[in-house]
Every structure is written in C-alpha cells, then in structure tokens.
Length: 257
Ligand SMILES: Nc1ncnc2c1ncn2[C@@H]1O[C@H](COP(=O)(O)OP(=O)(O)OP(=O)(O)O)[C@@H](O)[C@H]1O
Ligand SMILES: [Mg+2]
Image 1 (cartoon, rainbow, N blue to C red):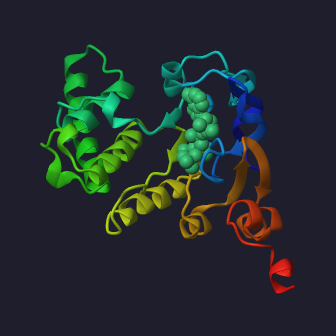
Image 2 (image 1 turned 120 degrees about the vertical axis):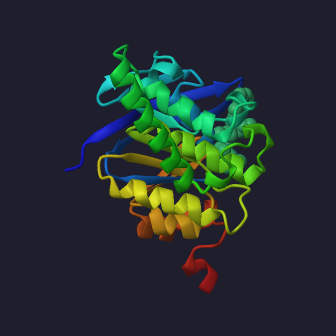
C-alpha cells in the first residue's frame, strides 16, 4: 500500500459566480505519477494554484503528509516539500542561468557558519549546480542572462530550478508547452528519472496523450472544475465519458452505429 503524501478534500474556488475548482477530493501517493488532464479552462492550473498556495480556496482543505496546510503561505509549502515549477519572470532575470540554479540550491542548503563546512558545502553546491545544468541541457548557456534565453530554454531552466529544490512533491504544469520537438525529450527524460526515485510524488498536467500514456501510473480528469474520472490510464482513456468530453470523439459503440 503506497503512502498518501498529498490530499485535497472538497477543494473549491469560485471566481464571482464561476466555480473553477468544484469540491475536488483526491489523494496522491508517493511513488506515483498522476497525470491531470482535461480541456482548456477545466481548472487544472487553478487546482495546482490551490495546492501550492498561490490561491486561497473558497472551501475545502489541502493536506500534506496528513497535516492541514490550507492556511499555510506558498513559501512555507515550498519549505515543506511541495515543489512547483517557478515562473521564470518572477525569478532573477538579470542573473545568469548558473546563478539562478545556485540560488535555488542555496535556498534549501541552509549553510551554517563553520567556515570549513561552508567551503565544502559550497563546493558540493557548485558540483550539484553543474549536474542540474547538464541534466536540463543548459550547460553551454550557463553564463547567459535568464531573461535572454529563448522560450524553450526558459522552460528547461524552470524545470532545472525545480530539480535543484528537490521537493518531495513535484508539480509540472505542461512542462513541454512551447518547446521544439528536439527539446521535449530532455524534459521527459528528467521526469522518467524522477519516477525512478520511488519516494517522489509527481503531478503532471499534460495535454499530449502519448506523453500521458507513457508516463502516468494514474490519470484524473477535470472537467468544468469537477473531478470526472480517476483510475489507471487504460481504463480512463477508454472510458466513454473521457472519449466524449476530453478527446472529443464519440464512444466506440456510437461511432459504429
Ligand atoms: N484569477 C482568476 N480570476 C478569474 N477567473 C479565473 C482565474 N483563474 C482562472 N480562472 C478561470 O478558471 C477556469 C479554469 O482555468 P484554468 O487556468 O485553471 O484552466 P486549465 O485547465 O489550466 O486550462 P488550460 O488547459 O488552458 O491551461 C477558467 O474559466 C479561467 O478563466
Ligand atoms: Mg492550465
């Protein structure tokens, strides 16, 4: 039995009269990659914003390892192990790629005052930063200003910063959106690598069904803010409700009629 690391209970947010996330109850397990799918405007990003603390719910709870974190600010959730890819625009656009990764690593290293210890940790930090840059294929652009990177490289840096933080729970919102075909495998390889670390909980919002099919252990479907389906990938993808509402095709029996 896998351990529940993250859970939402009746999580709800209203914007005026519009219910963007509607009483979503769902538990996520360590060692599992859950894909969250659904049409544009279904509430996927809003659900992430509620979990990571960027938005406060109108009702319901978020629990991290069994503790209610609903009123915890976003920064405290990050410290508690909840990791969301940064929006690069809110980071350090005028610092280099390398400096951004180092800052992300430092933020979780809590360097002490023993100078020898600081020096050793500093060396380890640089080595780890080099490794992260290799992993996201940005080593050649380490000295470029973050703001000057092309879009695909910025997305890679976002993922690199998340890797540097090394949270227990990884939240990816369309991590390959806007990337060229040759850049996509870099990100998919990283997510594959994360899956091998069996204690990580991974949430992935993704529109590309081939990616979902390959990576997901479980799929949940959001539609109009409501959790509409939840199960293993084969079953969920084949279910008539998903075929109709998400994939936009008629169920097999209707198509044949
Ligand atoms: N801050 C906000 N104020 C008002 N309405 C909002 C706000 N954020 C999201 N919404 C609305 O909530 C609904 C869900 O949006 P959300 O961005 O979560 O969808 P999504 O599933 O991520 O879509 P996509 O696949 O296009 O990224 C939409 O109708 C959107 O317009
Ligand atoms: Mg979205």
